[in-house]
Length: 327
Length: 238
Image 1 (cartoon, each protein chain N blue to C red):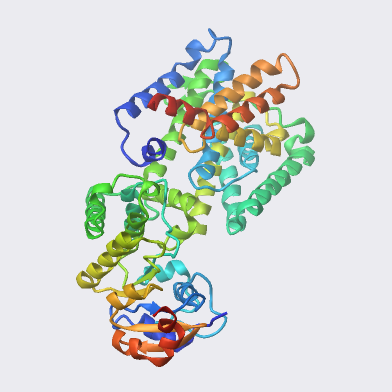
Image 2: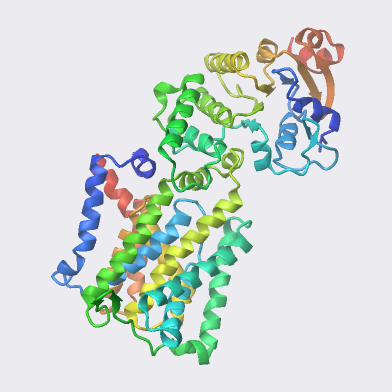
């Protein structure tokens, strides 16, 4: 049974896996068509993809390298602010702004990662929280530049011009969804490529047994640093898209609560599987949306679901589905 | 702590040295500590470690692997949730210098596959190749760990109690594997073992450690006749 979860990363997908892969992409690509029928709306679909990317990005580090970060909100939020600030102060180009958000988040991840990569376990996780909180307080207190407590307003995603065509992501939510989808797909393709590569196998080796990995000649600290940097890259990309979705950068995107949300999505969905965090993000975002309209205590319901999943399906929702499918 | 004297280290690391160097000694004698020092698991408090006359005392464990040192552990260290093939693949790709590669060329991928198959055949694991290592019998796990060490193309292969905790059958299997490796490869094999039958069966030369000190060194014949060794170890057994 574990062969299917782990082996699927290495080997060419078997026919069943091709089928589920096709199904996943079909569901994602058609989401704007059916999400209204089940009581959702297009922006909710975009949010699922965005948090799915953030959670899968975290899971690159957590599930496939075995290293815990409780501070990924920092890179999500920096992606947000990088994009927002670029649109607000520098350019009208949405693509350049997204790029700026990704670069800002990834650069911060690479630099901070280099500082902490030799710490292990709880110390590593604590330092990641600390860095996130530093970013939060900077955004919170720098009123003139970041908008402080009120967040960064005064920017809007702009239509994208490619040659003679103009793609209106500004006013058309569905078009914007497909813009998010394309960025998501590119990131996920890169992630899949990395995890199936010799480099990806060194990460899984580190997760499985760091001591053995070291004595196979794998420089562990360097590889964890690379994994951390890639992970922040994916999460920053999600943050950049989030700024565009809301036309707003909120200091709470940098707050450690968001880090916790992303961890919950990854663990709830199944951190040993590639797609698990996306499912976790779907459940989280949809529950949040429906329950928060009924009660301010929506988090206690998500907490309940989380506890049930962790207690009864330790491999997450996707792990549970897989096991059922296998028997 | 037992400190690695330059003398003890330099013979162990001489690539021209005899292919078999089993260590015999009662528990707590410092065998594993000795391994940990020469492979760079932790640094010595004093003294030097030489490899082919070159000082590697400050060289990292990872760099020592690149210089041709491969080891196994007393408690088998493998990747339990991966198949034997994937376990070996990681070792092969690491030693091939593909650690940072986002993909392999067709030719390289074929080379990797061929090398994995070679290791599987050498350790007689071909039939179980696609099973998870964590599900295998102890003896097969040991063989898989040795296959990974072999995949690093070591000049010195350090085996830490390869038959620890094994029954007759498995001890026989692993000892047979080590003997075949000795015959078919040019590696210097340094073996730590407290099972005296295994030591005398495999060794060309034996060093006996006692309380972190070298008690005796010589051929199996010389060692079995050595009075201090008989007092320290053999005497208590026989």
